Length: 89
Image 1 (cartoon, rainbow, N blue to C red):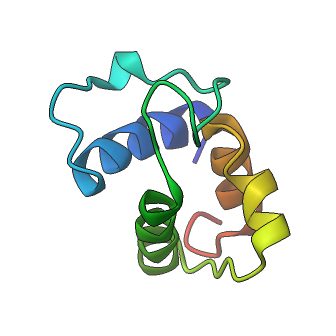
Image 2: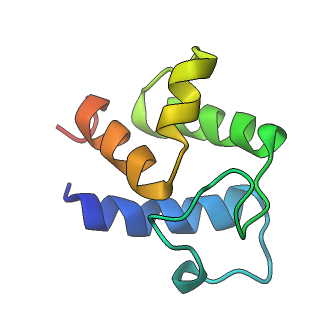
């Protein structure tokens, strides 16, 4: 799966999982900070996203420092999933 397609898929999943009712996929910019950015994603939201990533893509993120890098932006998240998911390859 191409990174751009994965980014689009993740935008929809983020909106759904975090119940962001007033947010459209076009409102989420792949290079803006995920945590503390315009979406107001916090540590509880990240935990929900980690669970989704484990279920949907078979990737375990259990290191806080690694998680900070992975969840820096939507692009870094998509690149990590793309590079590490067995389901996409």
